[in-house]
Image (cartoon, rainbow, N blue to C red):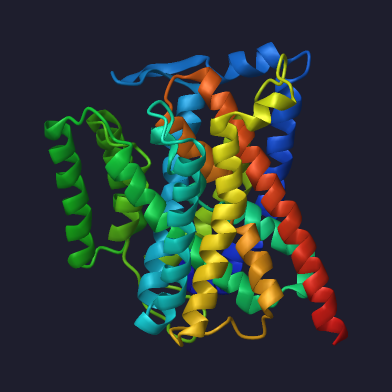
Length: 402
């Protein structure tokens, strides 16, 4: 890695938005390719490839490592490491650094997670075998959503792009908490204690001024293995590790060139946006439609996820923003009309990556149920993307012509 003193770069948030835009478009393409592969003459090869055993048994609970497990449990831990870095940056030195700035994103994200969960439980009738999927529609896929915004160009004000990003980051915090609390099973307290010791050691390195990234990356790899073995989902290791990475504040300026967190975030961002997330989409979006008719769309699980993403997200986010403004708690993002705010609330219904990920945790090893999860997530996400795009396109036209 080159010396940071020789590098000058724009803020991590600006780089994040640029990478996520192209990454979101690649994610859409990867998901489409997965659907084509799963319904082509190569479908058997596609599904076989995902389940090829490629490693030892690292955790008895999940069995031998396969291509699919390496993607979902290892590469996605790197994705969550980046998510954790973004969360820490925003809390310490960014858009969530002050109570005033946190207020609206927290309100919108919380309502945008609670409402879809209520929709899902209401539509599925609280069925015992489906109840564990309540968190599937609670998440927002920032890469997919920013990718759609990128297609709209200057029709969407920068303040709204920033607002959607901060809401999604708060949303990610909630998703991480949900995964840790509700989707970790059969905990090994001894191994978990080992993971806590490693995390504590990484925190101590930060406290005593260690700024070289290599020791933290070694610690992250060891922490990942221990968390995987403990029964807590391995991706949580990424967020925990991110919280220990040192950061140097640079208020009102581009990122500090000597800040380990900013350096690591810039280094990881393109690999995650252009590699990890599209690969996850390709490995998880494929579902065979053979033998399935239109009636699959009215199955309680499919309907619950799709409608919760489309209606629950927009109601929660737009409704909470309207109420917050109405009672003087917060203000509409600068330069945005109410129609544009509604369009962004629609885009927040794109759950894709995180929704598919949580679906796999909610219904592990159940291929038939997971097919319904994928159809529900794809239906709700595509509907949110298309309607949100149309609303923002028309709202942007009116704004520009007025």
